[in-house]
Every structure is written in structure tokens, then in C-alpha cells.
Image 1 (cartoon, one colour):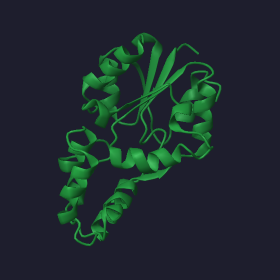
Image 2 (tube, helix red, strand yellow; image 1 turned 60 degrees about the horizontal axis):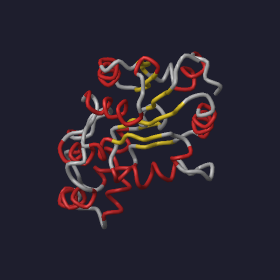
Image 3 (cartoon, helix red, strand yellow; image 1 turned 90 degrees about the vertical axis):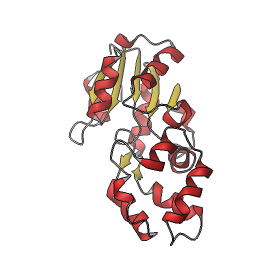
Image 4 (cartoon, rainbow, N blue to C red; image 1 turned 135 degrees about the vertical axis):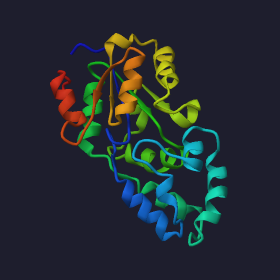
Length: 208
């Protein structure tokens, strides 16, 4: 394998997503305009503010309560939001662990504290481990106050971990993010349902 590090987007690459399932869950809470704010790749309004770290989870719930009149509590809103996340297959977790024997492994994701500290945290515990056991470092948009496809978040990755972009492969399912990553010198692969992370790892010689 010709890479010193491989960097994974989470949603759509490591974690399977279902945008429409999330939209339907919010509509059941009375949030009729939710489709305007939730996109497969980038969010809008309060969802973007949460993802970019401009507001906290508590502030997000404060803003969402009036828009979700059928929600009995904040947990209902959290569960509706987490419906975006479908599954994290164990074979992907196993592949990440094996890959760490060959090179550094990182995650770089547009994500938010509501999902990150609940569903995502739990999903990475499926093997009795935790997220730190799968990645050498995690760059999360809400922590960095910077979202893809802004180039700055990729520059944070390279600077923080001292990475040579010519020796780093970045995997993402959003064409705009792949383009932004490439503009900072990173090597890139677009992930699709027909060409998923496990297939890509096999092709590049990852022992996965």
C-alpha cells in the first residue's frame, strides 16, 4: 500500500444513511418544513449551525422544540435526528482495526454533538471497544467550527497530525468534498454504493 494514512468520512462511507427516514421522523413530530433543512451532504438553518459548532446541542433543542410540537421531550427530537443514521456494519469496524496495523487511520466528518455523543458513540462500541480504538484521530466539524467542503477543515487535519498530503488517501461520498480535499493536495476516492469503502481498501492493498 502506497499511503501513510487513510482518512474516512463517517456518514455515507463508514455509516449508512437514510435522509428520508429522518425527514419522516421529524414530520411525525409536527416539523412540516424539515425537508428544506436536511440534505444528504450539507445541512441548512439550525442544523448547519449545530454541525458547524455555532450553537450547542442545548441551544439546538431550544430552537427545535417550537418546530416539533408533537415531541414530548428533547429525546424525541434526538431520536428523530438519529434516524438519519441507519447502520455501522461490523465488517467495516473490523476493516478499520486491521487497517491500523498498516497505516494511520483518521475520521474527518461533518457531524454534530447530538448524533456524535449518542448514536455514533454507541455504534462504535459494537465490538466492546470505542471510537478511539478505530482511529488515530477524529476531526469533527462541530469541534473545529468548520464544515466541508471548506478547505480549512482538511488543512486542520494535515497540520494537527503532521501529514504529507501526497501520502494520504481521503474517502468521501460527496463529490464537492472530494474536490475540496484534492485541492489541498490529498489523494482522494469517491465512495458510491457500487464502490464502497471495503472495495476501495481491497483495491489499494489494504489488508481488510
